[in-house]
Length: 320
Ligand SMILES: Cc1cc2nc3c(=O)[nH]c(=O)nc-3n(C[C@H](O)[C@H](O)[C@H](O)COP(=O)(O)O)c2cc1C
Image (cartoon, rainbow, N blue to C red; front, top):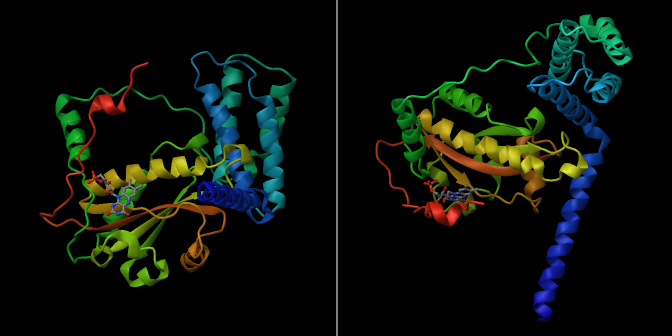
C-alpha cells in the first residue's frame, strides 16, 4: 500500500518536473523567433482556412491579421528577417485575401487597414508568390490497380532489423524524407525535425542504441525525429509529439518505397538523465523534444521479421 502510494508520488513529482522543464522552454526568450514564427504560420493558416470555406465570410479574420502584423514587428525587432518563410507565407495569403475581397466588391475600415499594411510592406519581402493562399484540388479517383499498389506498400512494410552492408543511397533518403514532409501538421507549423546520424557517429547517441535488441551494429544510420516545442502555445501541451509521430509514420512508409528498411526504436520521449548531453552532441536545440529514433539500412533481398500479428478489425474499431 505504502509502496504503491510512494510510486504514485514519484510519478507525480516526475510529471511536475517535466511540466516545469516544458513550461520553461515555452516561455524561454531564447526561442522567441520560433515562437513568433509559430504564431505567424498559425494565423496565416487561419486566413487560408477562411478562404477555403465554401461560403467565405466577407471581412473575416481582422483581429488575427492585425495580431500577425504585431508578431511580424516583434519578429523583426528580435533579429528575424523579412525573407523568413513564415512572412512569405503570410504576405502571399494576405495578397489572396485582399484580391478575394476586391473581386467581391467588399471593403470596410478593416480591409482598408489591411490593404494599407500590405501596400506599405509587401515590397520588403523578396518573393512570396504561391507561399500561401488556397489551391483548387481536383479529386483523384484511384483505379483498383493503383489502390492495390498502395495496399502492397502498406502490407509489405515490416520493421527490418538486418540490412546489407552498403551505405544507403543519400538521394533516395532525401526523397523519402521529402515525401514524409507532406504529412499533415497542426496549423501547418511542421514542428517535426529529423537528424540523420551516420554509423560513424553512433557513439554520439550514447546508450540509446544499447536497448535496441541487438541490431544496432547492422544499421547504416539512425534518424532521430524530434518535435519543436516553441512553435506551440502552452495550452497545446504535447501536441508536438502528435505531429512529430505522424511525420515518423509517413517516413516509415516513404523509406520503404525507396527500399530503405527501417525499425522504430523506442526512446524515452520525456526528458531523461543523459538526454541533454546526447542532444547537445547532436546539436539538437533545447526547445525540441525527442520523439523516436528510426534505425535504417538497405533492405536485404530476404530478411527475417517477427509476424507481429494484428488484432481483428472489430478489436480496434467501434462504430458509434
Ligand atoms: C513507437 C515504436 C517503438 C518501437 N520500438 C522498437 C524497439 O525499440 N526495438 C524494436 O526492435 N522494434 C521496435 N518497434 C517496432 C515494433 O516492434 C513493430 O513495429 C511492431 O511489432 C509491428 O511490426 P511491423 O513494424 O513489422 O509491422 C517499435 C515500433 C514503434 C511504432
